[in-house]
Structures are given as C-alpha cells and as structure tokens.
Amino acid sequence: MIIAALIACLGAGIALALAAPVLGRSMRPAPATVLLTTGAFVVTAGTGFIA
Image (tube, rainbow, N blue to C red; front, side, top):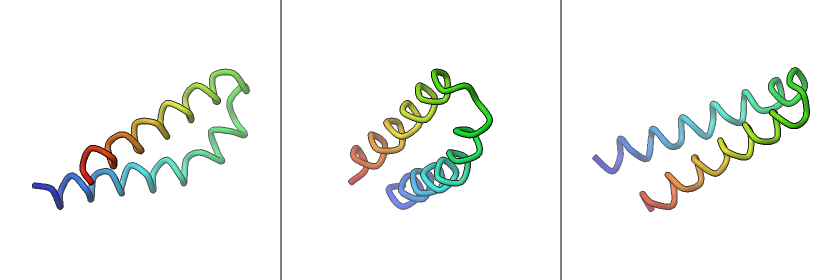
C-alpha cells in the first residue's frame, strides 16, 4: 500500500515536472502561478504524508 502511494506521488511529481514548462509558457501568468503552485503543494504534501 505504501509502495503504491509512493509510486503515485512520484508519478504525479514527474508529470508536474514535465507539464510545468509547457503550462508556464502557454498560460497567462496569474493562472499559471496558481496552478503550478497548487500542483507543487499537492505533490509535496502527498509525499510528506507518506514518508
């Protein structure tokens, strides 16, 4: 169970890392900041709760 959750958090982090540059360039600055900051917080919080 913990391994599956860790893999899910790792996958979400990788997806965010791959999508962030594209989203940062294609979106307007204000929504991109909110979206990317929220995504980073969710991935960090999920990893913190698991570890």
